[in-house]
Length: 151
Image (cartoon, rainbow, N blue to C red; front, side, top):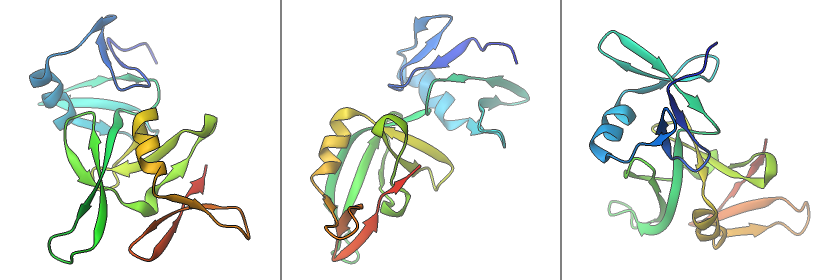
């Protein structure tokens, strides 16, 4: 497959022909129309046009983690700020460590993977503990352990 005109680097920065794409209004349109095919290849579909992207790792990047309260249950929850400037509740069941010890989670109702930045990983690490018996790492939230998978 030939190279795309649009690239997203591992830090979530978008480029068009090597030039940094910084206009939020355009990026919002692209994020709203972003898809991933069965082979894991990212593409934007606008009307009848499809443009495949070169994505170094993930299209979404977690830039910050916040501890909040669920107003309906008064339970603690973690929210993530994504590279599309949206905040969403972290599903702790989707946390996984990939190659080079990079932390990932699923976002957008499980449709996409998101890579944690170093800053957001350190924010998340405040809630991570290690099991002394089997040495697994887990997130402890509301009295429940969520094992972090290794991929």
